[in-house]
Image 1 (spheres, rainbow, N blue to C red):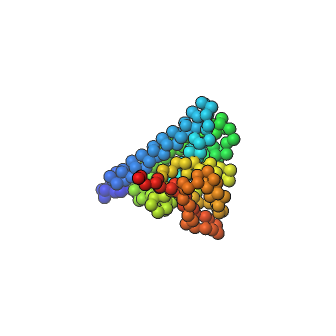
Image 2 (image 1 turned 90 degrees about the vertical axis):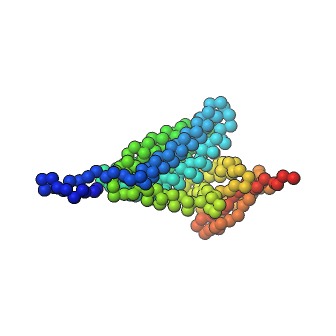
Length: 256
């Protein structure tokens, strides 16, 4: 809140907070990123449903959705909890909304597991549709309730919170921008499809960093059996509580 120094009837007049350009740009950037995530989730969930409807091989589409959620959406949700939600929880009238949004993050993680462990197409399509529907309503609430309230508060810098969120997400990437795929939050049965979907999505020369709670050496044996000579594997960290393995698709051979 700001004051203009004038008084009316002995009471200091209070001027409304007018967000600056930096705050408005930060708000627009967050909303645009939400729109991008929402579009990507909807597209991938739709691909699962479409494939099932055509009685096609739905497993690859389901794996692609799970890999995107694990690599992009769930880390984004956690970064929001550490920044935007933490700031909003201290503001009057927002604590209930923040608690509900945190709960939705937990529900979303459970739905990711449902997609990953589905043993038939209809179950995978139903779970994928639930993911897309929940995420769409969730980001709409963030865009229309949480963010405007933070901007209007005047005591919270959304621009500063955005930078903190970007810093946290940047720490979730390896060198050369290799994204982190942390599968520790997934049930064991969901990890296989997630990891292989992430590998299938790599272009030659690209890589991701797998984070697991045990040595994923059996995965290497399977890659050697199914993709001989076309992948790279190196340990960034080897226990005792976490294993970080950089998995890449080998560069294309030079022409000529």
